[in-house]
Image (tube, rainbow, N blue to C red):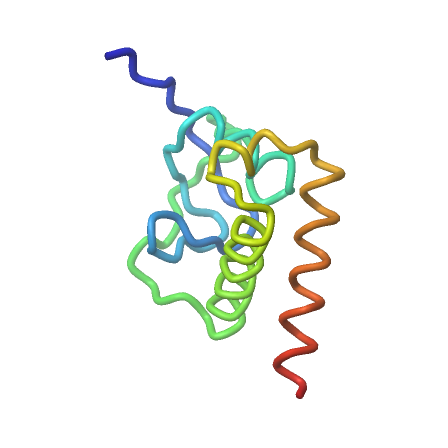
Length: 115
């Protein structure tokens, strides 16, 4: 079986990957498809020797990072369910389309929470 190439990224904001919260500054290894998704959304940058100082891996995420990561995951989940798509289809969306769908989902979630 051909394994997809993996890419090492440095996160620029907290995200949820495989059910775990990863803080900004953390290095993560993801598939090319997920890397493109994170890079397009401004959630990560390519890891280089210049930008990869060791991050504090053992410190707990802040409340704001937890909330942001949870909101991002909920919006992505909502988009994927509403549009009946899997991870690959979500990653294949254009940056503009993905951003618009995520913005709509976050707005709907915020509106529901306010009621």
